Structure formats: C-alpha cells, structure tokens
Image (cartoon, rainbow, N blue to C red):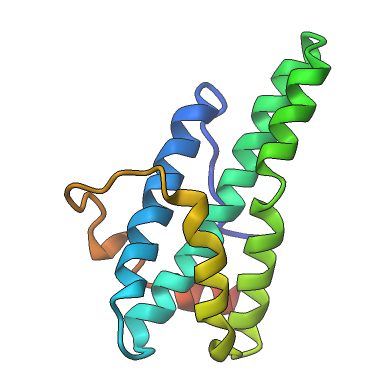
Length: 140
C-alpha cells in the first residue's frame, strides 16, 4: 500500500495506545450517527487503517521480544491481539464491497475491545478521519 502507516519502532506501545484511542473515539462517534453519510464512511475507513496499524505495532513488539528469546511472552501477546487484523480485513472488505448494512454488527463486535479506553473529552479532530474513505477506495 502506498500510504501505509509509519510505525514508530522506538515505541510501538505508545503508537498502539494512540491508535486504540482513535478507534475508541471513532466508535463512540459512529454509535451516535443516525445515517450513513460521508463522515461515517470516513470514520469506518479510518478504523481499518487504525486496526491495521495496531496489528503492525504488535508485530514490531513481538519481533523485539523474540530476538531476546521471550517466546512465551510474544505468543501470549500475539494471541491477545490476534483479532485486530481479521477485524480490519472484514471492515475493509465490507467498505470495498459497499455492504454497509454489515457495519453495525462489526462495530458492535469491536466496541468491547476498546471499552477500557476512557473518553472524558474528545481528543481526535475530524481531520483524523477526513479523506480516509477515498484513501481506502484508492488502495484497492
């Protein structure tokens, strides 16, 4: 992909937390949407990018652990996060196939994964997702 995220290999944990925050806020916004407008499509697409980014940070983390022979720790961590890439793939597929009727079920499945992220105030501005739908469609 031309515009894949650049993962900060110095601190994949921090990067993962930022991506989780983005997911949590976007999910919260999407739950209050009453119609599928352009913004909702952008929000769904940015979830794909964020989930793919989360999966990449997990790989960066476990590779570092495996170099130090922490295989059990790496395996446990991989298992803890193994849902991220398939979730991203399902979302990507439903967006590309224009199957928006499947979106609510996917969001409902994702929401519990981010329930530990407390949102007292919004920190993500609309430019965090603007243009994401177009970018996703162009990435086919």
